[in-house]
Amino acid sequence: MAEGNDRMVKEPGCIVAAMDFYGELEWRGLIFDATEGAREALSSEKVTGYIGFDPTAASLHVGNLLVMIMLAHLQRQGHSPIAVVGGGTGLIGDPSGKSVERQLLTAERVAENVQGIRAQLARFLDFDGGNPARLVNNADWLAPLGAIEFMRDVGKHFTVNGMLAKESVKRRIESEDGISYTEFSYSLLQAYDFLMLHDRFRCTLQMGGSDQYGNILAGMDLIRRVRGAKAHGLVMPLITTASGTKFGKTESGTIWLDPALTTPYEFYQFWLNTEDHDAVRYLKFFTFLDAHAIDALAKETTARPEQRQAQRALAREVTRMVHGEDAVRDAENAAQKLFAGNVSAMSLEDLGQAFPQVPSTTLEASESGWPLVSALVAAGVVASRGEATRLIRSGGVYVNDRRVTDEKHVLRADEAIEGEAFVVRRGKRDYFLLRIPRG
Image 1 (cartoon, rainbow, N blue to C red):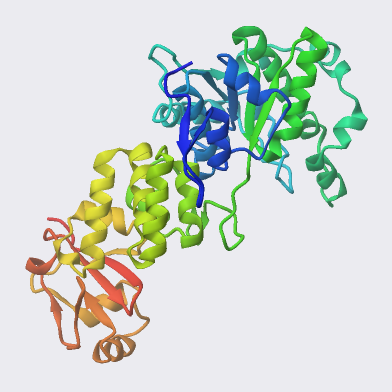
Image 2: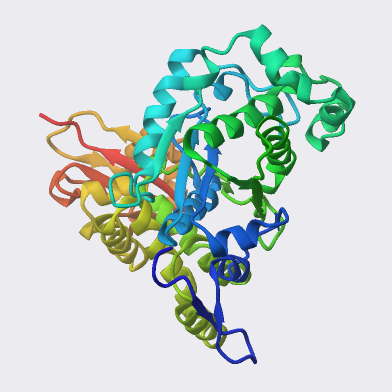
């Protein structure tokens, strides 16, 4: 085991006490349930544990972060983590948590997605050190597996009664669309994964979200029946926000780990906008800050909530892990300029980070400039010249964060950001990007 297995925690009103690794996971709220013997195994031996990742998209998202963090905790404590990318099971689809059948992906698309996920996992796991993590694809053993072999060697160990009793299956059976045999059999494939990992890497621990508990138990049971060996399971809570909404979902959609899908600025802002009731909880979940640091941030947030110190630490730590130190610096610089009303000082790169989904229009070439009224109509800020005139006169139009009240105002190229763009704001929140044609 690695040094530093004992941790110190300070609960409100309690003295500082030593914690083992499992105790720290409990303090962080990372354990929803675990099978008998899991705590003892993690405390007394070097354990090989795995978590599966579903390659249904080319990128992981913030909903995957908790299990990624769990694997990283495992490795930091001297255990051996395995990340299993479901190149095989991804062709089937897990019915857990789904109300309708998943859209089946082609083998080529799954392979592409697997490659995208590899790089993101490498931000959290060391695949080359003295205690390297493993990244394996379950297509290695599932793809060559024949139907007769699978039914004879695996299927015979499961009863239909037990499979029907799974909550995810029951919900789907009772739904209008039902469940296909393909997804009904998914838990057998996951159980077989556990068996193969046990045989190949001596893996004795499977982890996942609490919705995976039934599948994990199935794998443990298969190992017991076929190999006469004991395995363990540990599941994490499914996270919701303080308001009860699903974690990781926003009005603009999913928060991805790929910077091409969610910019580092958007990613940073997602964490910065965490509600006060969730901030300290998320620091425990998603960062490696110790109990003393989190306790200090909790006290600071209680005393001066308007400064949002817990949220700032959360945004910095998670953005640094996913995108690197430079991304944190750039996101904070862009935010400072934006909220200080200093848009004109932002670079085009800053604008791309801060306004990735803002409507963008390229103006027609002009040597004399662009009348603001015409530009607002061309960019779709307003529907007509009359509406544009009224909006300008009422003080509702800002160009590069400067209010314009003269309807005869002309946009000039020498006032554009880096000579290429204007940021137009209508009211308090509606932004538009007007680009000058090059050449």
